[in-house]
Length: 330
Image (cartoon, rainbow, N blue to C red; front, side):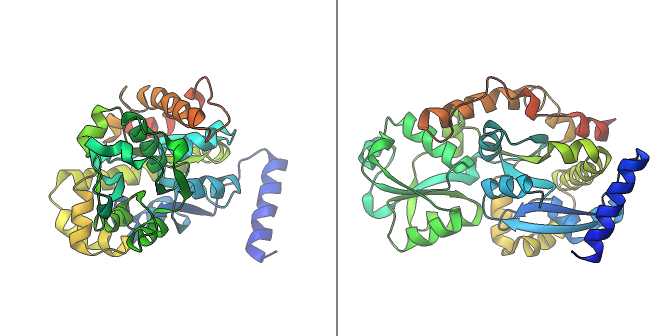
């Protein structure tokens, strides 16, 4: 055990004996590479550390399901831009997580791509039956895949579905190992170089396929470090407001692109498909005020029907706590 770990353990023990809460000395936050967002400007400028007074360890992930596992193990305290479906899968399995904010809405930037050699489009989608598809199971892309196949009346029981993170799926797709592949961000851009989508963002939304990410945390951390979580949300909201205002985009984009591991042109193209709700919007009925909770029931129902989770919960109200974001708005 390291000295720092021993010190933290001792501090926690003293807190229990004195009845006072231990204040976290550092924080581990999960995020995605090739998924450019305004918070990364604040991340690169070390605004979080300066405002919160803690050391922050930023850890990159490939999928939201990996984020859930890291939060379950206690290795990650906050996940930025975790897909709602991975959150629903974890919550349905009994993992005690909480949604604290809406990170981004992006119907155009999460999709499935059909190999161009097949010449299959929306009018011939039934021909996908019997095909091999790479899907990151339990993610937003998986939910979108299930909903699209249901929309086109494609029998997925006939398909060979391979669980693959988007970067690996894009590589396999480029090599011709998959007939269809699903993903997001930079991986999705690479997928589109070798195929076509069946539905665009507007068509997906019309079919009830919403795609958005949340800022999540283990419930225990949120309860113990509520002020810290609210501070994190406040800085994130300020970065979003700065981006949405538009006046500083040129300054921000270069920093965000570098932090995301992307070219500036790709970063601009990706972020043009993103929407970052303001604090007031996130607290509205459309989002944390009830819309997210209702949508989770629908997501869980799709996953339960597909056999991806044993069963859906009757309600996901307990998995959303807007109080931490409300503290930012007050």
